[in-house]
Length: 410
Image 1 (cartoon, helix red, strand yellow):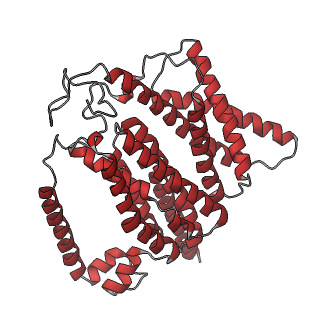
Image 2 (cartoon, helix red, strand yellow):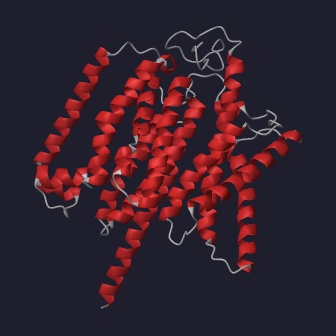
Image 3 (tube, helix red, strand yellow):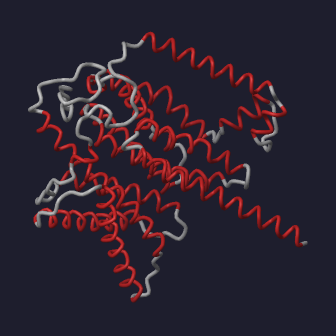
């Protein structure tokens, strides 16, 4: 009996460690996206694609619960990808296409979380993610700011129709799992058999996998021959071809003493409200309605904007993103604690832990959105005085402009 008890205890602890590690990874890996856009989003995508298979080795999964929290974590890393476009994309047309794709998907996921209707995810496909990947792939070797409107719209349409709609139907309506389908239908192995044992009991799978990888590499090499000659060295860092990086460009500048434009505040409220509603639907015990969330988010963002303007009038300078996140986070935590104390006296049900988590999420999004929009406003006026363009493929040097012009690329 003692042996059984300890075996069960160790099994539970192992599951908890694995679960915590995967969740932590899904929150930390996407933080790479603003600076390493392509590796960051591919890492987040791989974690998203593999977490269900990882959990299946340790515990039986409730598919309904899994898909709800999985969608919320997807929205988290895609939100960071969207704000990263404000930081890194010099092509205004690409940014507008990405913004429309992103908010269309965000609204669809919100409706899905509130209603539970699966086909909404097919009607509102996640074309933004692959469009982001496509643009970042182009940026690694070519000047993506030169991509025209027709090119970008065709790319978005191909991703929408031929990739995402079939994928959304397979995953969310048919509720198919690609790895399970391969294991059961192509390999013929039992579903409960771990993949490590599949490779041991079916050695031909190793050879087939190697052959498939070889064919993919060959196809990639042939595709590269059809593409235009690369215009610059391969680079994955977002700031590889700029003299002054966004990480330092704001530091030492005085904050703007005037309130942000109304459309900026409205977008910020819409962005954060939809994200918080989605996460609120999967947090146990969270009972706030979408209207209450939007009202609360509006108040917090208004307070944050007011404090930022006040700091600007005092002559406070921009600091690093981490320092700004800590400062605004402390302010927002104080707001949550004050609200919790007030409603506690009125005997109103309030989940402090959930509220603090969502406030941390809000602070991260608002901090990055505010910083990256501020950086974007600096690019155009500073680039207008730059007439030189670095030679194609040349590394950054003293003659390179601070930023490429968002419209002309000069």
